[in-house]
Image 1 (spheres, rainbow, N blue to C red):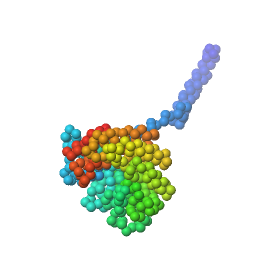
Image 2 (image 1 turned 180 degrees about the horizontal axis):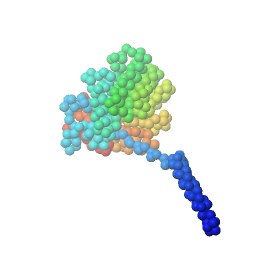
Image 3 (image 1 turned 60 degrees about the horizontal axis):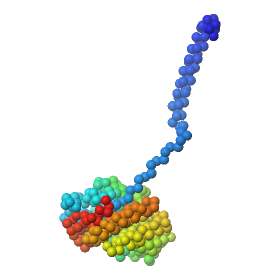
Image 4 (image 1 turned 120 degrees about the horizontal axis):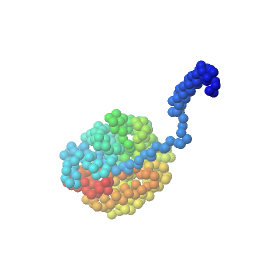
Length: 362
């Protein structure tokens, strides 16, 4: 090599210069390949799975009377006697969800679409989750009464189906347009024997009842597919009632996401009722594959110790159901007090303070 360099220095210099240029080109090409294809190359190790969603048990209150109580001058106080806005007070007691009923054209306006929107906005602004409960009536709908709204009274089945759809869609769209998307929606309230009697009475025509549930379900999903639809019955301890209704709905092609229950035991039988309810819950989950929600509970306000024991036991049992299939427990109108409208199963005392019953939610 030394000889070659001495004899042909120009040729050697040219050789090394060419080698340098080739190396530079190789470096540039390699860098481009790395930039172009490094993003598309996959690691031998699979990407870690996304974290599982955190389950949050709903601890709620139905406060449909709230604006009416406030208009009548009712005030709400902490146990220490500090006046506090009601939803904020309930949140401080451990509740995270609010349930609101909807009536079509109620006398006085309370629980109509505008009143529900006002309460829903308050609940949202307080950081609460929201359930909407359609009664499909101008007044109370429950196991003893399922009267259609006056405006729907003469309608045929087909017309009632349209009315159920349109009413559900309109109310929920109004909420959504104002920034409120409920997490859950009930299509009917305590529909032990159907709704919109006599046309939708289940014991007369389960097919008619199912067709109305379908329209409510479809309207909810048309507004927002993420909302879970509840079909709600009372007497959560009565397994035969639930099998009759939900077997009938299934046979007639109706759909729902959550089986809703009410449970109102007495201070003397709550332990038995809770056990019966738990049996019913497990049977329904196994039979229909749906989640369950206890959407109404209550006990006499002047039995706070028994009520606290009832609620603590019920919440504990429901949380322990396999697979987190029970989504929550709601107290019905806990803030009602002073014999408000003759109702005595709230959980506030006559001075407007929460009783120890509500400590079960905290």
